[in-house]
Image 1 (cartoon, rainbow, N blue to C red):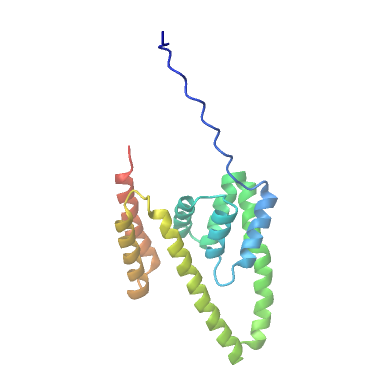
Image 2: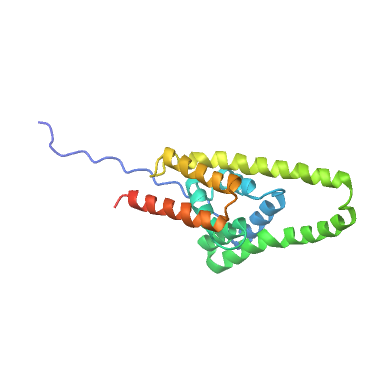
Length: 200
């Protein structure tokens, strides 16, 4: 006679532990290395290291945290480093990440400023700096395109996200509007629309 007792499903395997910094010292060293790699802009390096290599964040989390860092006063990447450090180790982590992002780059910038003062009028130096500017623009554009993958599952939908991005680009690059007003209007509209579409 067959048993009516339902067979219990096997327990689900435990979720893998998320990668995270081991200590404030790990944060300091990691952000120091990030900052020293960031010639022409740290954003591209930070996204690759934190999301792709260290896996401390997902692409979606990076986009969300970057949006918050963007609207806070101060350099965006520095804001992001403080947020990540605070998330894992509180005030100690925030200070460690901040020190890593600023200490050695500051010393390097001071040294380069002394050298640049001696060779600023050299045409070769001016040409090299113009070339670095083009590379920096390419790095930022490439990072933006890679981060587009993170909005595929956004509640607003890919079409509306692209429209908001295009409006932001037009306001900055073509109309030269102040960033504060763009963040206030477009950023505020995006926040309201997203909040209204979030499931209750």
